[in-house]
Length: 231
Image 1 (cartoon, rainbow, N blue to C red):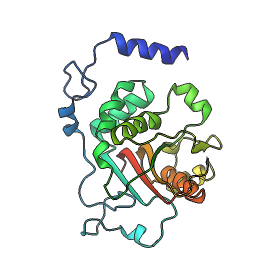
Image 2 (image 1 turned 60 degrees about the vertical axis):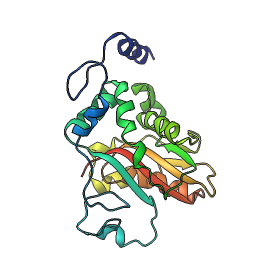
Image 3 (image 1 turned 45 degrees about the vertical axis):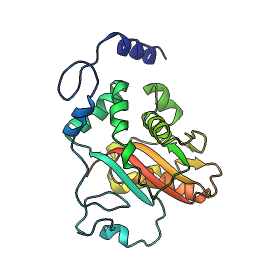
Image 4 (image 1 turned 180 degrees about the horizontal axis):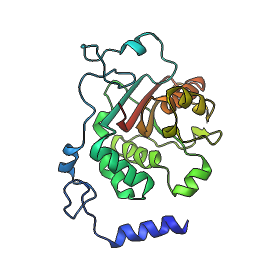
């Protein structure tokens, strides 16, 4: 608690310096967001991985094997988890430079597809112990910006952590799926179209497990957003 309060005081007292250009005035200037590596090119609409399928809006070979998704219906990220984007997220998440969440989240606002028509915004929850250590939930910070921008309700009660898990970053793809399985519980979301928010996605294990649980609780559709994807 004391540590999180100290971070707030420091952010209020010290002038912000842009992580990209070094000028004062913002943690990242709006025009400097263009310098971050975009997750563009031809990508699978469901997992947002770079795809060899040349048709825009198509599924990659892996996702095409499953006609009906068990997890996410679709995913979008603004950036690749590389270069300045990676540094920005690490600074925000692990070093407490929480002012970076505002510009990083603003880049996600236009990633919401018109066809999704979400009803609610739901962040990936942190286990209580991890949240106490960090002082905040990064996904919740991002979700707040998205909910405000699109005039949607932010629901923190619809998805909860059932148990603590190992850090996903230390695991391979198969281990990530096993590690996160059964980590979430969802309340009744019957008929809702859910916009599910995380900060970074790699294999999609966390987002897809959360989406699976939300679907089991009655969600009609589940769409994912993350600031960056590690390709």
